[in-house]
Length: 203
Image 1 (cartoon, rainbow, N blue to C red):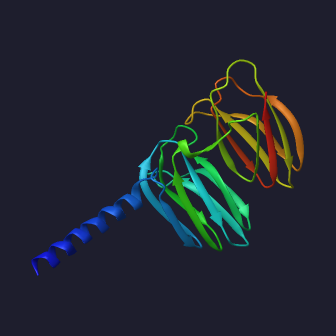
Image 2 (image 1 turned 45 degrees about the vertical axis):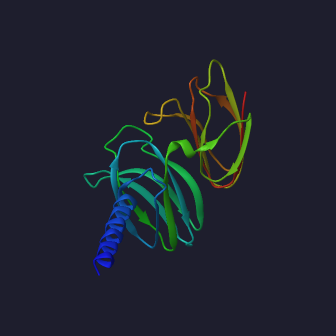
């Protein structure tokens, strides 16, 4: 009897611990799932990180970060219909993220990930579709980036020399586009917001 009670107490303690970690650790590959509108509370973090988001609905899918004071801070996603992408949160210095506000008409998932799990822009050319966050070795000297985008909506590319600081806007276009821009020295992170396929080549 004593062994059974002890085992039950250990199991209960393990469950409580797991729940606490799941609810509050933003960088521990924590996954949240739901359907429709929701507000997700997380342990306050001012550290930049990644959010891998999916939505299976047909109408608006909108995701905001929320400060400890309950103020909407960063608009991470504002799309219509199905969505799958990875975005950067706490991209600039602010009050930090204490929650996410999600507006959706279908099922969704949100996975918190550390910056170390960003996709590596290892070779000169990288290809993708939709929203992504790319990491690369810090650039040095005069460097450029050539872009090609095929889509009907926004194509926005930003570079960051230090996550948590303001980034540099490299491209901000609507509809299919080809062009070239300077890649600031020290760039180590690039975010892409796109509703179609894209190619980036750095020189």
